[in-house]
Amino acid sequence: MIATNRREFIKSLGMISGYGLTVGLLDSCAAKPTQEATSDSTSVKTAASKDLFFKISLAEWSLHRTLQEGKMTNLDFPAKAKNEFGISAVEYVNQFFKDKAKDQTYLAELKKRCDDNDVTSVLIMCDGEGAMADLNADKRKTAVENHYKWVEAAKFLGCHSIRVNCYGEGSAEEVAKAGMDGLRLLSEFAAQLNINVIVENHGGHSSNGQWLSNVIAGVNLLNCGTLPDFGNFCLKREKDTCAEYYDRYKGVTEMMPFAKGVSAKSYDFDENGNCIETDYAKMLPIVKAASYKGHIGIEYEGNKLSEDDGIKATKKLLERLSGI
Image 1: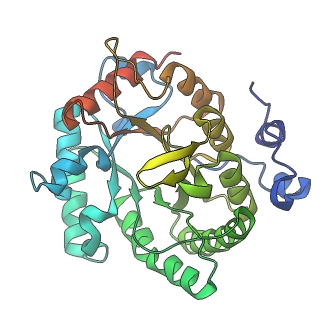
Image 2 (image 1 turned 45 degrees about the vertical axis):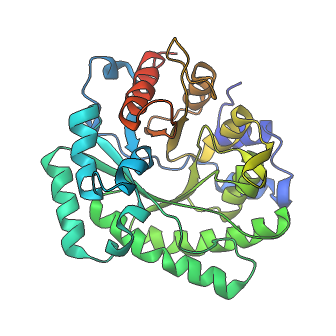
């Protein structure tokens, strides 16, 4: 089902009544959020890539074991993405250069390595900076301000966004209200630098696609959007096991009207090269139906294949199904 515009799409998902949103609010944000600018220089230069309706990027978390084991550093990431995988766009994870957000010498070197390899910096995934939807206003304000340095680093590196988490302890309604406030404050700061603030479905309330989309609509700023992840739909955990899941296809459908990035999560593959957890032949048409043309970031987290082989398998799958 493809609605003719974003307002009708949101209406078709039954979201107008959620959390007190009004038709007037939806009218005010009816224009589709700006996605990243396209550039021939950032296209993946493979024979299959010319037919992609999207661009491929590499999420740094795909290499988290290699990084944690000290076999490579964040500075090595752009060259590895380009030279080993043929990927010309990268998505950083802040924990791999956590103390370097304000280090201009370090950031200049990272930018130089991107430029030397013709690699585009897409976004920075930010964790560990506080709960953006903390019900305590002072703690929430601190979390917002903790992200300022990453907005500035993203601007320096040429990224279009930082990815944040909309965490908070409380009822869905309480956390939604706090999240709208925190995201609005950070987005207003980021707008001054032309940087987007995007929220990933990353556990708890945020893994409910309708809840997250209502929060973003409530913020009502064009530089505040979503980063739909194909795999992060655990609503409730008990010990180390997910006790309740949200439907991933429904969730991505609900988040796509606000998407400024997409994360192609993968763990395991069958003998035909298909992802076992997510039916990419079902998921990619959902992304395409939203008229999305930005980057889809490969985020391999499996253990059966090596990190390098998992990245290659995910890239091959995306390219094979690109014309779907």
